Image (cartoon, rainbow, N blue to C red; front, top):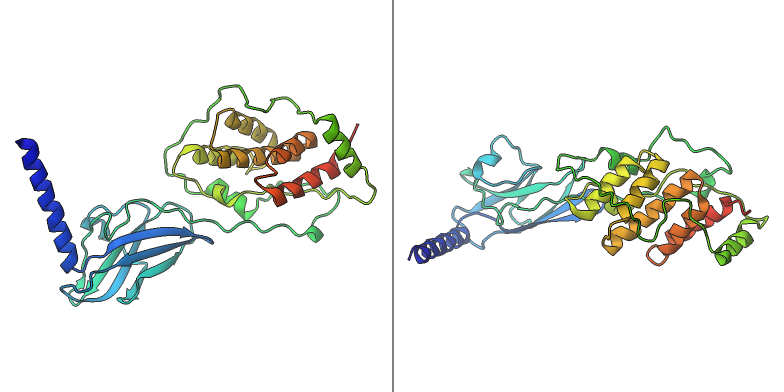
Length: 311
């Protein structure tokens, strides 16, 4: 009997909320989508007819969910748009996980009512970073030492992105799937191929100066394998601690991961070996993910073979 009564009360609340949203100036179906270049697209709809009538729309944004009307107190809207608008592109200047609220403005002022899932997003959205531009070949100099004193913008994003979230310990099970902790060896065929390429007189060593980071790893994810990979990169490859990066990435790969995350981690491991001067191991890593990143792997393989000293 109590369960039936609870169900009836819940049904009444849901029905009342639906009726309320159909007549009142409250947005519905608010959604947020991450775009490139640190932008988020916000979309919404309002009922066809509302009482009172809507004159404009205000957009609110913060790094915590909007759960109740009081959450709007003290916040200023990041944009105010005509009532005819149904979407807005929000350009952000700092990383983080963002939540939004869409508030109607009537003749009586802002209609500040929050209904999570209707006019307020319940899941944080993290903008995507623009991919790091490829360094032109003309800017690279043969045999020039790496400049470890400065980090690229991508590395700064990776190092100093918002970290106000739980810390996940890195796993260290000790057994690496498919990778030895020691120096890797190429097969005889691969070494012969490397010798043929690396010993050609017309080829010149053109070393990369800085690691490449995939767009997915430039901001701290909410959790899971990608979050652990982000923390692994931030502790090793991003600050150019290449020997440490090899150790951390090998430990990361010792646990079975999703294929996309696993492929990126192997690519980062190849870069770590590369900047440690272990070009054989680097080539082995890049070859193993060549199907996933054909053009990018080829560039790093070619550079590794150029620098490889064949015994």
